[in-house]
Structures are given as C-alpha cells and as structure tokens.
Image (tube, rainbow, N blue to C red; front, top):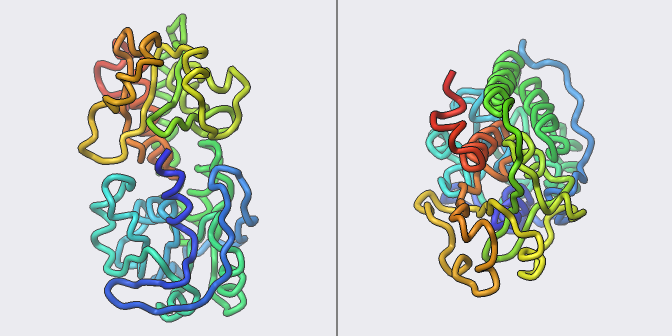
Length: 320
C-alpha cells in the first residue's frame, strides 16, 4: 500500500515549497486526511469555461495531474506535481515531461506567483490553503470523493468543466465505459468467481468501501476481505490471511521493473498452505493501476481480469 503514503504527500501543502530549481516559502496550516476516507470539501461550482478556457492551470495532486494532462495541451499548464513524472506511480510520465514547473512542496505565495487562472485540488489538499487561494480571488476546483469509478467519472466531468473541455472529458468517460463494457462481455459466461485478496510485504489489504473492492467485482472475482466484513485498508495478520485462504493473491508492484511477486513474502513459512501460493496464482500488478484516482483505474480492472480469468483474456480486453 505504498501509494497510500504517496497520496498523502502528492496533494498536501508543505512548509518549504519548491518550484523547479527555485524555491519560494510560505507557512501554511496542514491537515492530513486519509485519501480513501471520502472526506472532502464540496466541489467548487463553476460555469462551463468553454468560452474562456484557462491558459495558466496549476494542478496540486497526482490525480488532477493525470486527468488534466489527458484533457488539455501541456502549454496551458503552468505547474504540476513531481509525482506525475515518476513512472513508478504515475500513468502520465511522458506527458508530464512537457510541463516545465513541477513541485513536491508548494505554498500559497508560490502558487499566487505563478499567476494561475485555475487551480485544481484534491479532497485532501490543505483546506486552509484552499480558503486562502479563494480569498485572493483565484478560481479553485476541488475534486470530490473518488471511492468509486462513478465518483472518478464525476471528477473528470468537474475538471472538464473547469478547464473548458467538457467534450474531451465526456469522451474520456465514454472510453472508460466502453472498455469496462468489453471486460463485462468477456466475463458474461463465467460460472464461478475466484476468491481474491490484496496483500503485500507490509500486510495492507483492501476491504469494503474501497475502489479496489469494486475493481475485483468488475474483474470477475470476489474480494475475500470484503466478504469477511473488513472495511477500508487495514493491516492483516498472517493468521487472518491463512484463514481467508485466497485462490488469487494480488500484490502491488511500485516500480516499472517490478514484474515478480515479493520472494520473501512467498517463502514465508506461515503462508505455504495458501491455495494461491500452491497453485502459483500470486500476481504483481502495477500499483499505479490499482490506486489511481483517475480514468487509468480501468487499466487496473483490465489487468486484474487478465490475472483472474487468463483463458478469457488471452488478448487485451481493451481490444475491440
């Protein structure tokens, strides 16, 4: 669950902002929220900006980076997070390279100095900082909850309105729906859904009220953690994992070179009785697909479906 920590820092304001090679500082109050809790400021209400499209957009989170870079010309983007250029956690590293200013830490004064005509924020962006920006007259659009695919699509629409690209946003959502429909078509004849568990070396799992749970269902599996009444993203004991006995074990791979499951985990004596280990059904899926809060979540559904039902997905489910 490494991205849990990454998501905290991808959109929260720090005390020592850094813009490219130059730094500008501003003291801001902070409040760290669980990015999967659904706690969020109500989305900013705006009129469609299609007539006057913002030309100096600042994005304050990896999720808004991924949506923004898929909707607008990079020339209209003043700054994004450094996380967008990291291929281990970002789905848009190539597109991100076209944006000159990237930051890992930033404050209100530094944002104002960029003279943005639109600021895109995440639900867990520092609320006091957002209030300051709005008080200074800057248009701020804050994404809403992203605990479901439907919620992610609402956020895409919201960003589309803010940047004046409602048609592009609609097309992005339509493409998501088409790909998910193709996955559903291939799974329409299945008679059994294997029991699956998300687990890793740090022992985090994903239960009810998580987007991972929805992804498992869409991919043709059963989330054993959810069935056991587990909610959110807690840690599991090895004894609990053994008791659940998953047929398929999903691990997050946090670097593009990670292609194999963690050998230390698989060789742990307490886990040797697991059905998933006995049948070699332990799969490492890129973490950027499993926990993204943008349209790239469909990549995770497709990859999971390939792993759960390999005979049905010999070819890519995104292939028409």
